[in-house]
Amino acid sequence: MSSAARGPRRARKSELDDANTQIRSVFMLTGLFSCAINIMLLASPLYMLQVYDRVLTTGRMETLVLLTILMAGALIVFGLLDALRAIIGVRMATWLGAELSPALLAGGVRARLVGDGAGAQPLRDLAQYQSFLASPIFSALFDAPWTVAYLAMIWLLHPTLGMFATAGALFIILVGVLNEIITRSATRNAGNAQIVAMQNAEMMIRNAEAVRAMGMMPSLMKRWSQINDSYVLSSLTAGERGAMILGLAKFARYLVQSAMLGIGAYLVITGKTTGGSMIASSILLGRMLAPVEQIMGSWRMIGTTRLAYGRLKARLQDVPPEAERTRLPRPYGNVSVEKLSYCAPGSRKPVLDNVSFKLIPGEALAVIGPSAGGKSTLCRLLAGVLVPSDGVIRLDGTDLQHWRNEQLGAAIGYLPQDVELFAGTVRDNIARMQDTEDSDIVQAAMLAHAHELIQRLPQGYETSIGDAGSRLSGGQRQRIGLARAVFGNPQLIILDEPNANLDQAGENALSATVRDLKQAGAALLIVGHRPSTLAQADKLLLLKDGRVELYGTREEVIGRLRLAQSETPRSLPVPTVEEEEIGEQQEKLALTNAQ
Image (cartoon, rainbow, N blue to C red; front, side, top):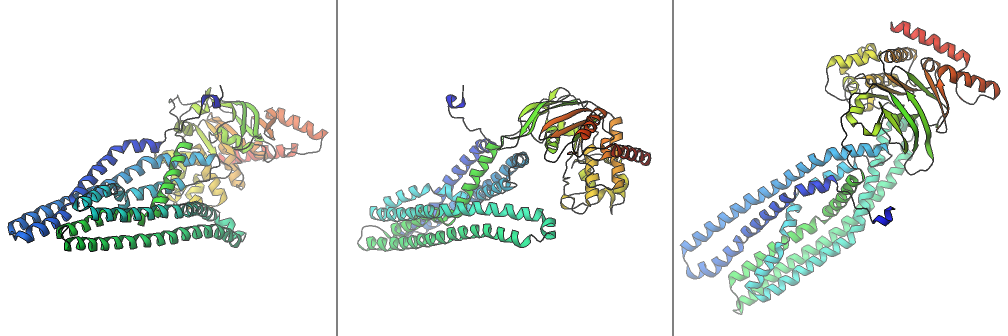
């Protein structure tokens, strides 16, 4: 049965929905506090009413003292409850951040792997939502329903005062609706433009080296300015319109309050009400309009928060949490790739198509082939970074997708083509940012034959490498990345162009590391064409346009390539007889140096 026949798919309940369910009782408590706060605020108009209508007419001091004590007590309770309500909002915002931040960060990492460019924007949206919950405007929303109660009390004091207060309140509310209508589009456009501008600025900063070296700053700044100008224009439009509406609302409020006193005075003069009712109605009107004006003054924040909340909810629904997996025994390193295919998101053309091979512990498979043949994609699939579109990758007979992420990460060592290090020390990066024993870190560095290189750094293993390893050379990053890949003695090692930035000493260290890993029983997949790499491979796999052209032992594949070279012009970067001999000599030299 098709999905259409089954009916519309229900939206998945996100972590945000779960969090809102958990804090529902907190919202109810905030509502109860707001009820008590607004009841306590009635003390002031009631006090004025009794003073004008009872105390001044009777002249009884004991009544004045009693009323003053009661009013002071009510206002003390009001102050305490208002402070507690604000604390509840702050704590609720803090709890929500602690609850959702890990899911957003993990989801952002997973989304980035499939080309999503949102970056840290979901975390900024969460911060916006937290700021709203901890702000006075959140409390004002709970006070807004009491507008009706205050209005009813004004009606009880005198119908004429009630009708005028109703007309004034309706006018101010209509102004608020007008504010929403004329600023909604500009606020939404400003928010979207700001996100794009921030992403472009982050991209420029991240690629500062290329920007500076190739003189790209003027053109990039021009492009960024165009995007930022769109944000500034939309923000200015929303701000100006909101300011005009807010000015109109303040004018209306002060006019209504002043006119209320005038009408009350007229009623007092004509004997239709008392002076106490006049003063009390004015205080009630001010209290009735206060949350309305506060909400209108912060309408832009409310609109921004509403957009942030929508993006937050969509993000958590679109990127579901990882499913729970059973903890399996530590793998040995038997890899089986069966009819593996992969298409990039939004594309139907396969990057890899029907790829199959096997890899056993102690064996090295070298993947060769022309550029854009799918070699790096194969590495990312084997590392669990990408999910196959079709086919399966098995580690010790279990589908790679059925392993727990942390367990799979400990079993796999991955050196990507572009080595990405984290801000911190050399020690932190080799340890994969974990707290671990120094001996384990030194062991990994020695296995990667990078111990001496690290010791020559200013503070050795405690050397700070800067953002993304900016204080290290390309070769140093490569070798520290290799040490990170072999940390913890993983059973499957994936090396994508591991010698791309290495000098001869680095080449020798890499050859020795591959030798040691094979002897230790690790399965290795290495992408590269250099003779020193191919000389240590037990098997070769030639990828072309995402398909396996040749696969077999090193001798078999090289033999078939030599035969193909003798029959057709050379079109692939494959080793010649001389290159193979050079590679064998380099391997022997590397092993001698390592010993």
